Amino acid sequence: MGRKRHSVKKRNSSAPSGRRPLQTEEASPTPVPVEGRVSATSSSSDSAPPPLAERPLEGPTAPSPSALSPQSPILPPPTPGPRLVRTACYVDFENLFYRVFGSGRDFNTPRAVRSLVALSRKVCGEGFAHTAVYANWDSITACARFAQNDWAQVGWRTVAVPTREDQVSDRVVKNLVDFVMSLDILEEARDRGFEHIFLVTGDADFCEVVERLKRLRRQVTVVALKSSLSYRLRQAADRFFLWEVEEIAGKATFPLRPAQRPPKVSPGLHRDPDASELDLLRQALMAAQDDVGGAQVDWETVRDDYYLPLARCASEEADALVRDLAQAGFILLESQRVRDGSWRNFLRIPV
Image (cartoon, rainbow, N blue to C red; front, top):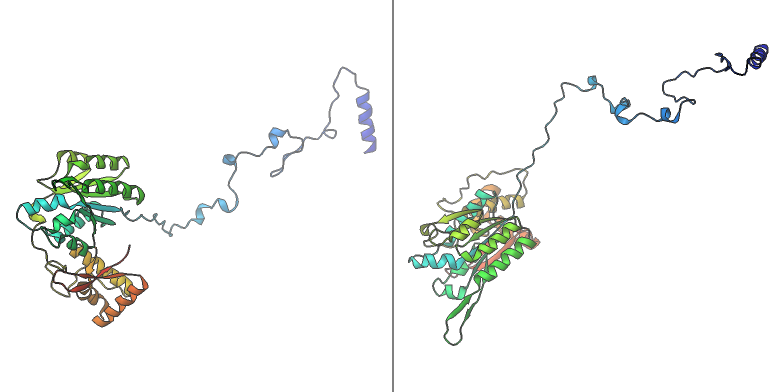
């Protein structure tokens, strides 16, 4: 080997200066690329790794087609449930009451509430999250003694709005119901996040309120008597429903009872063996609210017609359970005076 190297060097030195010396295989061997390695003689551009899109998938990130079993079904993604819409209802009671009272009839509060709750479930699929009734109750009570009490017994909040009068002539100067009601609608729609507003009035003064609500991307539904609905308000609202006087007129009986229902019959209620006592009570109260149309229902009605068929226990045990749940804060149990002068317990589950 030593002689070969000496002869190669000697042959290269004897070559003419104008020629490039020949390179043999032993003097400069060409590198053979090896898979998985980078040649040391390659340039910097050749040594860069290929982009991710050109790399072959290796290891557990590239499952083979045989790994996917044809017998295992591919489940579809779960479908989301219906989205609940937060709704609120505001009633200009004077706009309704004087129209009905002028026809010589009495205003039937339970019938009007049932109709409003049915409209809310039809349009939004859910009942009201907030309700308020505005009126100057002092002037209305002179015509209908229990008007404010009737709304309170169905669980709707009553707002008393005074009327400005001239002290000299005792003449009514301005009714502030529209002004106070408009402020509450705009503030609560912004602060409490109500998405759908039910406006029970036919007064054209609420056209500007409806336009501002639509700028806030709120849906507005107007419910009014057919004889009192303003054309401007009808055009400004997203949808409207008309009442006839006969639909909300008539004698109202309290405490509220399910319409045309024999006692201790609750269709549509099914006992769940895994449900807790609070769940059964909630189910019974929701069924009673749908039938009665109020946010709060007399506890005796809920107990006898709805809860006992589900729980299958004695009435004394049900009364003791409700008292314990009320003390723990799971339910609201309030005593209110009804028309006959007696006191009754009204049940409500806080939202």
